Image 1 (cartoon, rainbow, N blue to C red):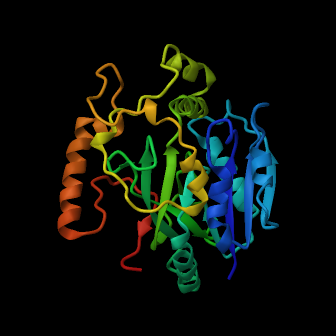
Image 2 (image 1 turned 90 degrees about the vertical axis):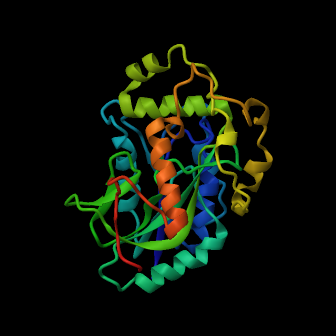
Length: 309
C-alpha cells in the first residue's frame, strides 16, 4: 500500500501560512508528497520554504494562477486537482497550507488506510476539525464552522476537489462514501497577527470575488483584523503538533488581542456571534453532551459517512 500526500499553495510566506509544517506533519506516513506551487509575488518565498524540507519525497509542480477567470475560489480546486493528478498512491492525503496533523494521529491514520484498503465501499476518510481562533489556545465550536471534512481519498474512485477546495466530490457529482479516520485536523487558518489576517482575508476575497470587488469591500477597512473578545470561546489545554512549536513560540501579537470585554458594536459579527448560530450551537452542544458524538443541524456535508466503519 502506498500513500501520496498532496497540496496546493501560493504566497504562503507573505500571508503567514505554515506550509512547510503542514507538509512535514503528514510526510512520515507518505511515500511521496506532490505540491502545486503557484507563482507568487516578488516578496514571497514559498517555493524556497518548501525546498528547505529535507526529503526526496517532495515533488513540486510550478503553476500560475489565473485568478480573474476563476472566481468563487474555483482556482483552489483546480490547483488541488492538478497536484492530485500527479499522485501515484493507493490513498491520497490532502492537506491545506494552514492544516496540521498531530503526530499522535499518524499511526492511527496509516492503520485505517491499511484496514480499509480492500473495502470497496469506503472511498475516503473523514477527519474531525479543531479551528483555532486568534491564538493557539482558543478555538471555535460554532454551528457556523464545519466540524468534519474529507482529507484522505482513494486514488481509483474518480474523486476530485470541489468548489473552493474545502471538500471533494465524485466526477458524477455524488458525495464520496467516507469512514471516520479516528483523527483530527488542527486548523490554524485564523491564527495570524491581525495585520496578516486582514491581508489574508483580502486575498481570499480577491480569489472569490475578483480584484475590483475585493478592493471596494476592503476600502476603508482597518488594517488589522479584530478577532473580538476571546473569552467567549472554549480553551484548548492539550498539546499542539511538534512541527508547530517554533510558530507558537514566536507568537508576538497577544497585546493586540482582546481576552475579555464586549464586542465592538461597529464591527461586523463573526459567525459565532450571529444569533442564529448561537442558538443552533447551543442545541448541538446540549445534544452532543447527552448522547456523545458530533451533531449537525445542517444538511450540507461533502461526504456520506458510513455507519461505524
